Every structure is written in structure tokens, then in C-alpha cells.
Length: 253
Length: 307
Image 1 (tube, each protein chain N blue to C red):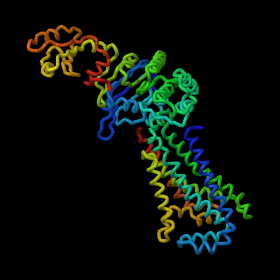
Image 2 (image 1 turned 60 degrees about the vertical axis):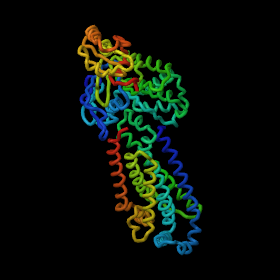
Image 3 (image 1 turned 180 degrees about the vertical axis):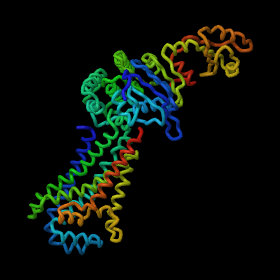
């Protein structure tokens, strides 16, 4: 296994384990949630959160699972993982002084960068898909069931957001020298986006509007992607990847 | 487009700036195939930039280059397939073992290169099973050299390949390189170790401030060196006016001595002129015809020691 692949493999395993550790207790808590929904609603400090609880209550177990796994788990832990996986992609080589030997091999820059981008993107998306596959099995413990296909579509939709965040961070990594600086900037950006989501008047400006529970309920009800929300995410990823190629082609040791 | 794939390196008007700093002024150079050409010059003279431009790590602002018949274009991948490169700065992936590192370096090369790299590493007695973060500076250098020498290519570009090596390892490296060159490989190397360059190189290129200030074959350098006369006077004698008085040679003051470059191999006109200065104290020493490469380097750059 290649050096970068080896490193990204263990990061992906770590991400999967943590996702699963968040998912399993959340599903096992479902009967309690059903029993205490009204109390939780009364305790919610913000109107946006009360709306989320209303949506979860109305959407049943699917909405609850989507809220716990995708909206909460993947949007928070997933974006952090996406940022951390991408911030050192190129800047990490510059920072540790290995940029020159990395470039000196008889491999084109386009191929080098594409391989690295794909490895990181896979490390972000595969754990989301794998953890999603365990949802029907976990639901069996609380005597609930869900069809797998809508969950897979939701996981792919969620992955599109993570890949978009990953690609933006990756692009910054092709420009900068300090991976930690990039990580701080992007983590601040994602926290800011989450904060915006929680403020009623500006919530529609948040990136996480594209992956909130309502989006997943749409996918469940229609059995297909909500393309008006998915396409912008794919476009962000594509543009960031192309910009990364351009920046990387000009980068010198 | 590959043309004349014989290991020749042709450089025409290659130039590069980094912001306001001129790293390389438009430079023409022909590196003959099957020989070792040494790039010499102080730090910041443009040696590494030239090498990086040649293999596409740094895109030149203008000019062209052809390595082993392949034109420098795009990101230089085509050229990197035709040559090997060992960078001057050492930074490796400490978490990899020496063996894993060789495999990593040689990705994109023929399969046999990995076997040869292991043989070369064994010649240096490198512990390939150990992680690279436990290696000394010299061991890392040897590992990079083994990776640069292993692929079957016609051209090798080596930036200070012996830096940090002890005399024994340096000697092993020179032997391996000489054997490689005897098989027809072209080597362009930079080094601050003038003794080693003197032993290995058949052509010398002197760079300073991004400019090529002198090029010569070993015999041309020797011939030029034979025409240098160095005259030392006791302390207190002001040399600059003396240098201005010299008519039979090009004279200047370098390293606390008057250095005269004669127009022929015959030193007698200059010595006669010197003898005709009754107002000047007798010289302490006159060196003639024994100039080493190191002394020539000092004279060219006006420094007491090579950097």
C-alpha cells in the first residue's frame, strides 16, 4: 500500500469507528426519544431547534435516523474529518519539506493531485456509506425497520456536502504552506455555517441547509435526489478540484 | 518530441525570476553525453534553480531545454521519465522504512530499478528495514543517491549528491558514479566539494548570481590555470595600484594577492615587468602553473574558501 494510501486508510477507519460510536447509541435511544419528545421540544432553546424536533416527530423513525446520523453526526464530525483529511494534502508536503521529492518522480502533476484528491474523497465518503449500511441492523434492536435504498441515497447526498468541504480545503492546501492554518480557517468556516443555521432569520444562508432533515425527508418521499440541492454541492467540488489543478500546476518547490 | 536520444542536455536562453530576484539569467549550455559536468558556484548562484528548471519542477520564464532528446514542456513529466534527479535538500518520510522509501522513489520506473536500488543501498550498508527517521543525514543522502542511480536512464541530475557523506562513503559514491558514467550515462552534478568535482568532472560550469561566468573542459581549465600567476607581498604593500600598473597581463587583487592572467603560457614578460618596478618591495612568493580547481574557484569568486 502506498504511503499516502496507508495514512488515509487508517484515518478513514478512525472516522468510521467514531461515526459508528455516535450512531449506535443514538438509534438505541430512539424509544426514549419517542417517549419524551414533548419534553425535549420544551427544552429546545432556539426556534430552529424546535422546528427540527417537530420535523423529527412528524417524520418518524426515518427523520430521527436522518437527523441523528446525517444532520448531526456527518455534518459535524464529517466536515471536521473532511477538513483534516484535506488540509495537509499539498501544504503538508511543503510544510515537512518533502514537496520536492514528491514532485521529482516521473509522474505527472495532474495524476499526483488527482490520486491524492480521490484517496481523501474516498476516505470521507466510504465511512459515511458503510456506517449507513449498519442502520437497518441497528434498528432491529429497537424493533424498527427502514428500507436501505433511501438511506443510501441520503448517504450519497450527505457525502456530496462533505466532498464539497473537502474539495474547498484541498484547494486551499494547494495554495498555502501551513496545514494547521488551513484547518483553523475551514473549521471556523464550518462552525460559522452551523451557527448561521441556528439563527432563524439567516438560517437559509447556511451551507447546512443543503443537508438538513427536510432534504433527507424529500429523498425518502420521492425516492430520488433533490437535484436543486445536490447540483450546487457537486459544482462546488468540481470547481474546487479544477482550481486545485491550476494552482498545483504553478506551484514550485 | 524525442530527437537525438543520446543523453545530451541542451539549454537555450533558460531564465527564471522569483519576484524581483533573478535566480537564473538567460543561460545557454550544452552538456555532452557520457560525461560528468560539474556545476560550481556559491550558494544562491542558480545551480539548484537550473536543475529544477531542467526537470520541470520550476517552470522557466523563458528559454528552452532538451534532455536526452526530449523538449522541456508542460510539467516536465516526459523529461523526468528520461532522467533521474536527486534534490539538494534532504527531507524524507520518516515513518517509512528505507526499503519502502526506495519503492516510493521508484514509482513510475522499471521494476528492475527496485532490485538495483537495493543492491546499491547494500553497497552503502544501509539498514533498509529501519524507519528513515532513525537514519543519519548521511544515510538519508545515500538512500537518495541509491534511488537516483538505480533506474536505467541516460541522464542523471544530481544536486550535491555527496553533501554530508564521510570520506569512505563519498569514495564509494564516486566509484559507483564513475562506473555508471563509464557505461555511457550523462551526469550533471552540483557540488561544493571541489576535490570530488575535480576528480569526477570532465567539464566545469561556473555560475554566479544566476549567470554563467565560465565554462571549460578539464583540460581548458588546466590550461587556464597554468596561465595564472599569484604574487604575494609583505603586509603594508598596497596592491590595487600595482594591479593597475600591469601591462603584460590581466591583473586584479583577489584574496590578498595580485593575480595575473597571462595571455600565453610564457610568464617571462610579466616577470620582467615585475622586475622593472624598483619602487616596489620584492614579492614574498610567486605561484605559477600549479593552480588547483579550488584556487581557480577562489579566483573566480574572489573568496577565500569555497562555500
